[in-house]
Length: 436
Image (cartoon, rainbow, N blue to C red; front, top):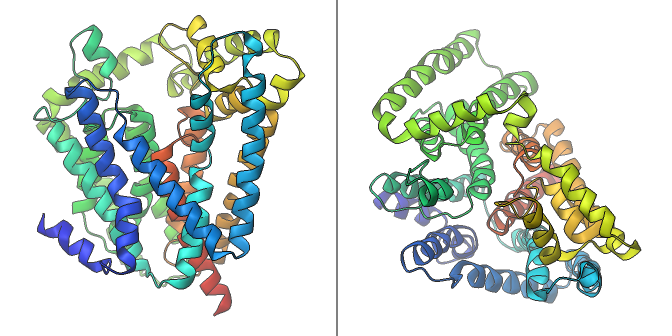
């Protein structure tokens, strides 16, 4: 607890850091509370949704009243998405289902969490100093929240990663605290790991955070977390030495690679032995899935690719011109998927889900925003002038891959706020580099 308080102190609370604390860190704490209420009190009250809605409203208000170029951009984004949402609501009943229009609005709003967060923090950073050190510290605090939540799950304070198995077989598979959406927190952890591992593996060469990240990955128990940890470590080391113009002695390079090739496998083995009884069901599940799937792509995507054709056969069969443009809306899309698959309300690949819900216009608009930011980050990566360009690029590339493998990246409200913060800080550092 004292460590966390010291990290918060470094954020300069109660000045500019208090904004970072309440906007970036507390949503993860509230998400834990939300999971506890739902799992133990059996209540459908979504404290987390209301809290994030208040944050987004305050962000929009702040940016609009600042009235700068980002205010105009945000107003345009909100206006365009409002028109698309009106189209979704108007034509969602073409499938002749009973529609909950609030769900359509809520889903479409989630798609805007990242751009709203981005414009807020870019505007905020223009008038408030915030260092690279403070940026990393804020991510470390979120990292602590995840570690504590996952570790406490071992003692019964949490929801299994695969709650479905607990309901049907009574077996606990994976430990993820009280976070409800495993795929969503997977995307968030990939973003956090990219920076934490870079700072402590490559930059500071301290193993404690790497061990903690490995424990989180192992205990959550998804193949995405296992693979992401390994890929992030490899990409960070590779990019550090290939693209950065740092004068590093061959001895230092050998020493770091010795840590990677020797200590991490040994640590992974020890962690596996220590937590074997807890992670055995996760390992068995992965082995079962390997045997069930006929190719690597279906295994990695958990057969999501096989859902595309059946879903879109039904969608296209029912579609008119309005559905092509505006989609079916969240409710109709969910009902159609449920009629095909017993346990799935979506394909769970972001592109195809967003296309089905918001149509060509909504999908094109959302991907235009993300693509624009991707090329900004790519440009910063090749400028090689700051201490976050490498983990930033690794983060974005992996998020893009995860978006097309397990989904829940572009549609994540929790992730959207964090991603916007990370991308905005990249813009701040890049602008400072150009101006200097």
